[in-house]
Image (cartoon, rainbow, N blue to C red; front, side):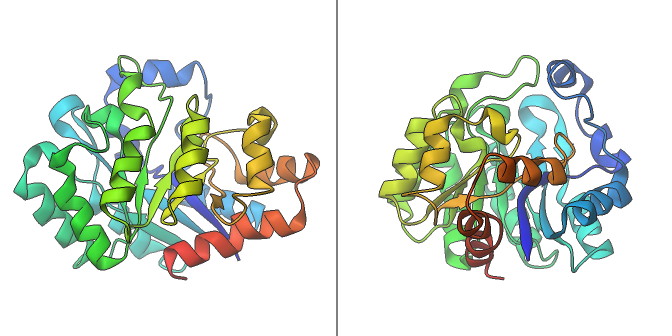
Length: 271
């Protein structure tokens, strides 16, 4: 059962939730940021033989008026409950209201994780304002997926995505399941070190064509961190079938592929 740990919601409503002033930078790097709605998302999964995929909300209303809401994600999961796993997002600038929204998303709406984009909310991952949210996730034994590293939205500051701040979170919340997205490029050595030293930290390769992933990252995926690596697409930015094909063309062992696409995500997500 292949599991994609990282994809975006591609309904028109979700795409419209991304402010136009942010999108210009993405268009120069990725040429298909619209996707094909929910049918297109499921069709891409089917083409690649992907059984389940995480889809994420984004709440950065205070800083950038950016809202792909928990309601949108919950609606998508309701449409395809056997295929999609919804991750919530809440705006920590809202204080206690954010914690209340998270409790509702994980309870009544049935979402199964939390997505945080430090670059968009303009907070480092170890900002104390986020700690009540981590408490909730740790208590529920549900994962937090951090965007880390480069983000191509126009006008976004790179510094907030530095993975080293996630190390503090991993130490302060040793039972919290953590995913560092995009292996934290360009700070991928930080990601590798954080994942290696903290039992509760994983990383994914979402948003990267495998042939462009640094060789040291691939060595760790096939070696010391085989049990910590996760498949992710960042669909619709990249097609899942192409990513899986390219991993095989690069000579990644079937044992490693099974770990990153099946065993590790299933263990992390409690499937």
